[in-house]
Length: 241
Image 1 (spheres, rainbow, N blue to C red):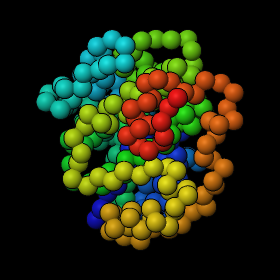
Image 2 (image 1 turned 90 degrees about the horizontal axis):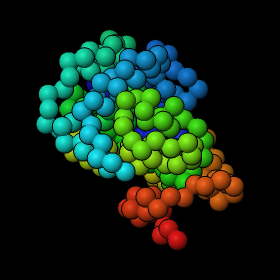
Image 3 (image 1 turned 45 degrees about the horizontal axis):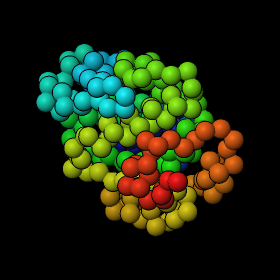
């Protein structure tokens, strides 16, 4: 039996891998929405708010995540995750897992609770990721402190930055693979072969649309922020002007 979860911010293209896993016979939960999110999400949302109490905002775009790796996991958090994953735990499928973008907000404690499962770390050009609205745009909804702003695009960008830094600060689990959404779309067969080696079973193929890439190039609002620079360089998205 294998378990897999997808770690990636909302609007990073995680729908593609969720649909791929579902098409491959992976049990992804009793109830899914069109994006492949496992529903209902409320217990996991509450778990996000519990873990956020252990994150220290240092001002600006800096957070201290140290307590997430050293402090005892809050028992309330464990109970809420157990509630959210109840159907996954009960199912007897050979391969199972879940996808919900908000899982990214609790990645450090998920890794500590489930050190042996497969983690697919999904990333997309941040300029594309922040074009559309998502539930995690306002981190305060999940108990995370940050420098509040009425600029919606900047709010989304800060959320992207926070989640990226949280993922970077989390020690890599034993079974971890990074996938760029752009590579999945443009080199689907190559990426799927790598994923099959990683997961240990064959994957189905879904339709991918190249027009979903580079939307920022025709976007008329702000989509580039200075604090994207390091992440873009680290993930091969080119030099920012």
